[in-house]
View: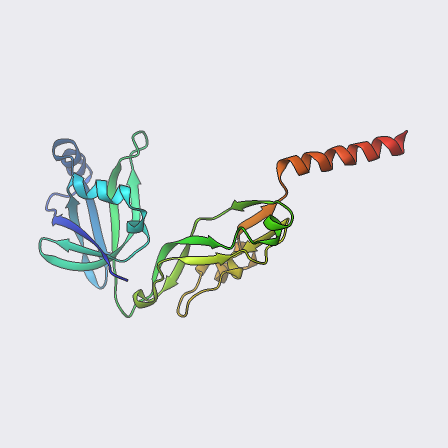
Length: 212
C-alpha cells in the first residue's frame, strides 16, 4: 500500500519543561522516533499536521512516510499521549520500520454479509460489533489495509472470535499465542430486545401456571 506522508522537524530542546513550553508558545507537538538500530530522535510537528492525524484514523494503522528536515523515515505510530481534559495530542511515539523485521500494529476490521447472516435474515437478530480493530504482526510488505470478518454463516446467539478471522499470508494475531483465554469474541448476533421480553414473559407465565 502507498504510505501516508507526514512532515516533521528535528527538535534540539528536550525534556518535560521544554515540551510544555513548545506546546504553549508555538502550539507544536513533540514526538520521538526510535528503533531500526538508530539512536532515538526527538522531533516536533506543526499544528496542521496534528489536525490531519486527528481527522484520519488511517494514520494509526498504516506505515507512514515521515520526512524530518528532508530526511525520509518509514515508521508506524506506536503511542499517542493526550491531555486528560481537552484530549488534545501532547506527545507521540513512532517506531522505525525495517523490511526484514516484523511489526506489531493495529488494523481495522470490516464486517461483511451481515444482512444474509442466518441470525439476522431468519431470526431478526441484532449484530453486535465487539471489536473494531485488533493488533496484528507481519512484515511491512504483508501489512493488509484491513481484515474482513464474514458473517454469512453466523446464527442467532452465536459469536465469531479472533481465531475465526481468515488472515492473509504472513499475518498473525499475537493475542492467539498467549492462550485460549485471549481468543476474544469479535462479533455476535443476539435476539432483539422485544423477543427477549416475550421469552421472559412466557417463562414467567409458565412458572406461574405450574405453581398454580
